[in-house]
Image 1 (cartoon, rainbow, N blue to C red):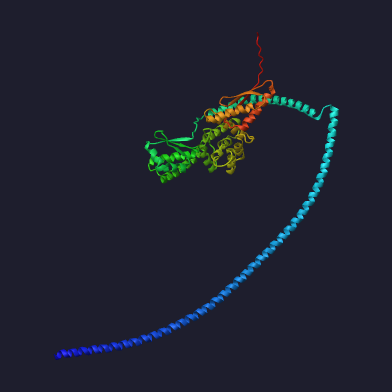
Image 2 (image 1 turned 180 degrees about the vertical axis):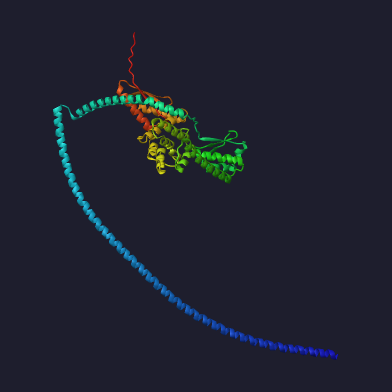
Length: 517
């Protein structure tokens, strides 16, 4: 029992001691906190004061800087205004000077006009005097001759015209007869020998190419989903693909042989490869284009090798290679140029002219056709410009310019190239025309012939290489037939395009018919 009491007393003492210590601790912490709060308030006041002082100083500095900037801008503006004012003053002075000069010129022109008007009036009066004198002279001449001025003029013109026409017809007939007698035999021998030595086959070129397919199933793959493959190929090559009922074949149609060849090679590569889609088509077309460029270069070099023409500019060799893919009336232009070169060399050899120069001019005579679809102008003009650009000789340039009669041939080489070009183009099978152009040319021939007075009928015969013209014997005499033939030839040369040459045959005959009864 005593133990329990002692324990309770001890516990009570411990609790009392704990309460005392707790109160003392709380009191101490309160004092400490109050001291800290007081120090913090003082520090906060000090910081606020420092901030106010700093803000005031910054404000004063900013105001000073702003004033300085305003002053600086004002000075710059005043300077700029002053410069502009000076410029305006200078321009105003210039305008005043120009106005003064214009006023002076105007006054001078007005003075000149007055002088000119006076001179014109004097000239008018002089013209009137001359006119009166001329009328008096004509009246005097009419009295002396007994004819009016118009009657005398008509009489003189009729006599002179009939005499001149008669003499001109006789002279033309004599000159043509002499020229034919001297030139026909020799010309036939030279041309016959040249053609015999330069015999070549001709195959007419077409505007379509046919690509064989391994099976009709390939047509669907070429067309592609919703036609995307065929559209891609046509867009990249510029050639139309015709896919119809033709078994195991696709037709490529286009008038540009280079593009058609690129499309053909690209399509063949795609068929062999088997992977046909727009990206692959673009890759194959690019490869085909490079391959055709290599072929063009090889063909140009082959042409120079076959003709023996050396020292050509590399760009001219490329242009010659492009002629491999150009045609004229179905005739391959590169083969035609090689043939003209060889013919020109043979003819020059027979005539004792420069064979090398003749062959060079013959090879380059149609050079403009390589780019006439890209550059405006005739192939003759383009060829002349290209030859000058790549420093060909004057004789070669002149031969190119004259080979279709655009200008008169003034050198023997130009005449030789003209003849060789005509022989190559006019050979049977060398060229072809479509039926529509052929019929139009025949109709135009007869139309030109019938347009001349005195012509009764005309007939285009021998595939348009000859036109026979029947004239009215009562309206046209023998001398006039020669002049009519020459006039018709000039009209045909100026208005028609045709391969080779056209013979104009004017016929005049008088028939007397009676019946015995």
